[in-house]
Amino acid sequence: CGAQHVHLPPSRHSVLKAASIHWTGDGVVSVYLLLPVAVLNPCSAMDYSLATALTLLSHWDLEQVVSDYVYEDASEKAAKAGLLAHLTLTFAGLCDFNYHDGGICKAVAMLWKR
Image (spheres, rainbow, N blue to C red):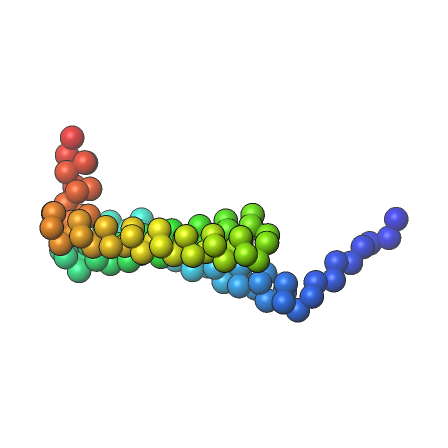
C-alpha cells in the first residue's frame, strides 16, 4: 500500500490555480458586502457599487457551478452563454432599480425599519 501520486495535465493545473484565485476574490467581495458602509453612506455611487459587486459575486459563484457540473463542450458553452445573459439582465435590473426607484441602500433600510 504505497502512496499514490495524482498527475494532472498542465491545463487542469491552471484551472485549479484559477479556482484558488477565484475563492480569494470571492472572499474579498464577501467582506466588502458585509461592511455597513452602505448603511452609513447611502448614495447613488454606493447603490451602483453594490449592484456591480452583487452581479460579479453571482457571476463567479454560478460560473464555478457550471464548470464543476457541466462536462460537454457544447453544453458548457450554452450554459455559460445563458449565465452571461442572466447576469446581464440582473445587472440591468439592479441599475434600473437604482435609477428609477430609491436604490439598493434605501430598499435595505426600509426592510430593516419593519
